[in-house]
Length: 161
Image (tube, rainbow, N blue to C red; front, side):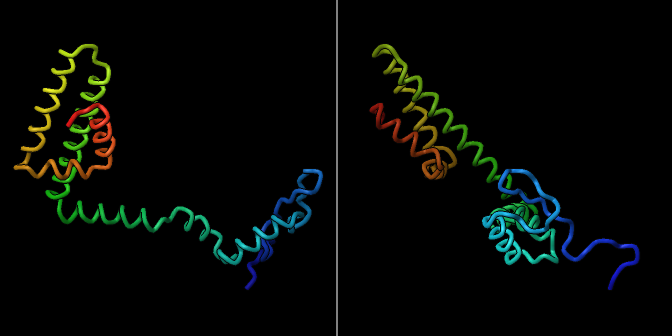
């Protein structure tokens, strides 16, 4: 079926090719380099030429990300209280990680034994507070946090048991 007044061919607009001198040549539809030909042939087998927007669609579509986003959205809709609890838990964990990081940084920079002992007492107090938080359920979750191994390593390097 040909549209009246349509001058467009089935191949589409001419492609810009680069010749050996680096100059663009728009008079041909074929790229002048073998690598460009291979890339074009690969793209045409991967994305059929009759679907020009398919390449763009597939570029932005990531199954992992889409699945995560959909899961989060569905969970937020079906269980808003549970989602709020997860958000509060993650915020509390981040606050605890930041608190430990700050205390360990102060311990690294301390000058005397008295100052070191004061910071160690404060770390022990925070430890007991975190262990008793949420009837003891917070501490195991904190240790599963992605940033906890760095805190644990820094604690052992500084001699905090």
